Length: 256
Length: 256
Image 1: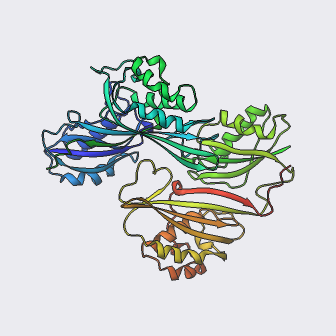
Image 2: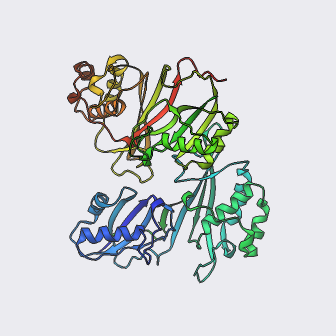
Image 3: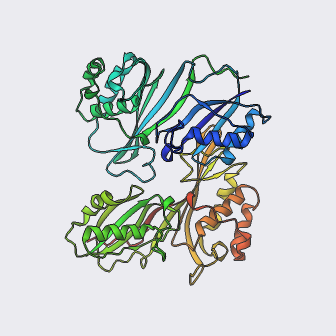
């Protein structure tokens, strides 16, 4: 039978989701080892989102096939009992044998988190990118709306991508500000899309930060997108600020 | 001149505040090395609170003497530039040469943080102790008030303490609950006192947790304190849940 897992992780210590040659520790590799131990047979997960090294997740999705008699819902406590505490399985249930999380239409929501203030508290350093100096979040919000819709995001794709097309659809970009203390704030950029190019969210966040700093005008974003020119976008921001928040499957998940 | 530093740290990677034989990494040791590098002369801080291995701080205080010409307020950016990001200096200024942070009356506020729910999110694991099952926080709050005032806290002192007396004064104990999600909550115990015995806050938190679980009645806490019997109190809870929140000096800090 095919079992689905919803997985949250602190990506700090991992070389991303996907297993790699040379055996650095990855989320996928760790899950495979634990499932193989639990089921007593070589088991491999198929992940929905291959998050990069250092990127976090509150709800990545993967599936695996097993003939083990372990009841599907028991994988939550069983895996959490043997996984390190920086990886937690939040949910597990049986799905249709044909359900493939990467060959199914989804909406993925990522959040890029900033700590905006003079000194980044030690407790935020692993989960937020530290920025200081004046930042105009209203300009960022105006710029954000230009990303919505279907566009060729070639300008927002890191070199080395093997994507067949650079056209993607973004459904929503929302910027949230919350006071951290009287002199500092949290700035969170939520981006929901049908799929993303390599480093795309971190380059969009870097470009919006350039807008916040007045180096790119919010009215110029459409031009930057249309240019398909990577040199006109902002930098790829560090992985620590990025979290895969949730994955929604357009036609739901075919639970069995 | 004597300079005061306010220091925040994530204690996860450190063997506590105080320098130790055998050279494990400590907050004090790290500050001493950085100050010696900055000032060009052997420099040693005198800390106010010697937090234990793994305990965090949002505002520990220390002082050091130097003849360096570095302006006092410049130690904030200068130290933060060379310290690891899990230690941050929040403030620095000159104080009276006679000011000694351990020979001065203070009120220290600690917070012991729980994550109460079935699964502890990876992002909370370093800063909260994970608890699950029914917990009656109203009973905990009733029990908490029994700790207030001057008591002999011998029952709440770990073996190995070298304190001359086990009498201490607690000014306040406040329990805060906040929803984390529909099924989980944060439980934070704030304890303010004039000083604490070895592991005292972690044993009080462990005892309040036993009350929350119905194993000790809230009305029995006075008896437990009076017994001076360590076997009647709860366990010493893990260091990760404990943070030194702030230190207030009864007569203020004699800034120069």
